[in-house]
Amino acid sequence: MQEIEREMIARAGQGDMGAFREIYQRAAGYVYTLAYRVVNTKHDAEEVTQDVFLRLHKSLGSFKFEASFKTWLYRIAVNTALNHAKKRSRVTTREVEELFEDSATVTQPDAAQGIEAGETKDQLKILLDQLNPDQRACIVLREIEGLDYQGIAASLGININTVRSRLKRARETLMVLGKKEVTGHEM
Image (cartoon, rainbow, N blue to C red; front, side, top):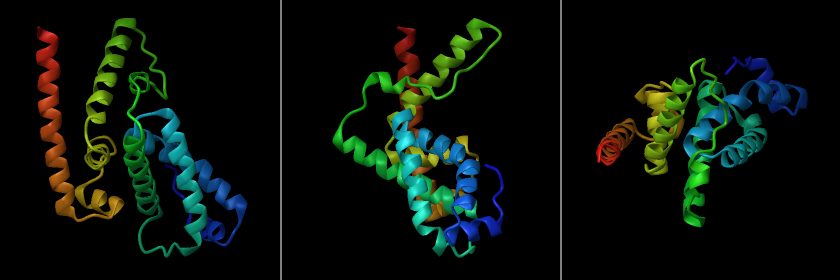
């Protein structure tokens, strides 16, 4: 995400739509990518991104600059994505086709490498989808986004020990599921 100046945030918080539009242009891809990693479907990630920017627009005037804007936006995005994922899992089960939906195409000079990379990405999506949304968010923030435990705790608004336990449980679950996947392919 491109750095967003304090002045632009303040102007957007005071109702300057041009400044808000600039924030949106700089941060929308970042929010979408994060949402996609939590909810696992293009359509849901688009919905979450819209919800995040609606919430941001409503609450930007109350931003106090006590934390970094990126951390604050991260927290809004992850919480919105988690709530969406929880609501969706209660309403309906995902269709298998949605698991294989991809927001970006991979271009590889060697077709075999491209197919292998796509299969690995699909397997990872399937494994991540089997975690509960809270565990998935922690894994995505740690392993994909590269946040430290303190950053994850701040982004999700939870205790650092909760982050540790969620990551531990998620990793244990992924190891068990990964072993089942390997055993299933060897037969």
